[in-house]
Amino acid sequence: DTEVTQTPKHLVMGMTNKKSLKCEQHMGHRAMYWYKQKAKKPPELMFVYSYEKLSINESVPSRFSPECPNSSLLNLHLHALQPEDSALYLCASSQGVRPDTQYFGPGTRLTVL
Amino acid sequence: GENVEQHPSTLSVQEGDSAVIKCTYSDSASNYFPWYKQELGKGPQLIIDIRSNVGEKKDQRIAVTLNKTAKHFSLHITETQPEDSAVYFCAATDTGNQFYFGTGTSLTVIP
Image (tube, rainbow over all chains, first blue to last red; front, side, top):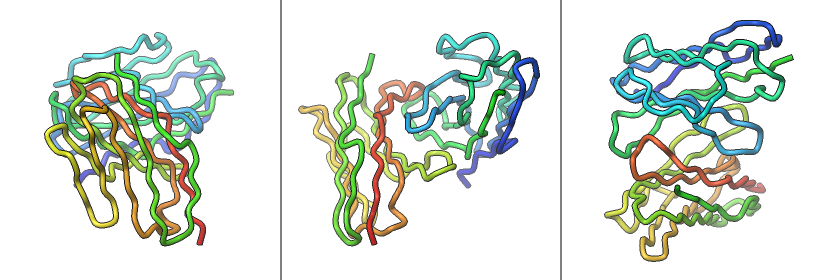
């Protein structure tokens, strides 16, 4: 099973709201990722967690706050977003730190009003 | 850092014909090269990958070739079908955690 699940599928929020995106995998993978994807563009890496510790933060604004409660779960907390943050947010996971396949979830389509 | 270029950006083929998408990379340390297919409204799905110790890999109608000397790799899809229509992304990495993606190719297979 190579499934990564994400909830919710769609999210509409105002600029003053606080919301969270959730990601889950049960493949025993030890690395998990958040990506942002704009229309017709490749995914852009935001954060990487390796063995539940934040290992890469690609200079993402502090209005995005990642959390890795355990090896199977990854959250992205959103606060005071801007309309330009509207995008598809993708979660991915891979087995470990060596170059390896990243398996992507279906994404959360976020719209900021 | 790594820079991956992908061509063409759009590709239309007749059903049954072959499609070829090419990517070049800049960092000779890159050693893992996956290809992803993304259908509208879905997340990228791995379709094939290759490591730097292999020159070619095939899986049914899909093949990938790697030329380390020239720093380019290509995706070949034979006997294309309408369900192959999607956006395809190549990527390169040396560490595994940081994938460098190409800009994508929108493939349309005309029935």
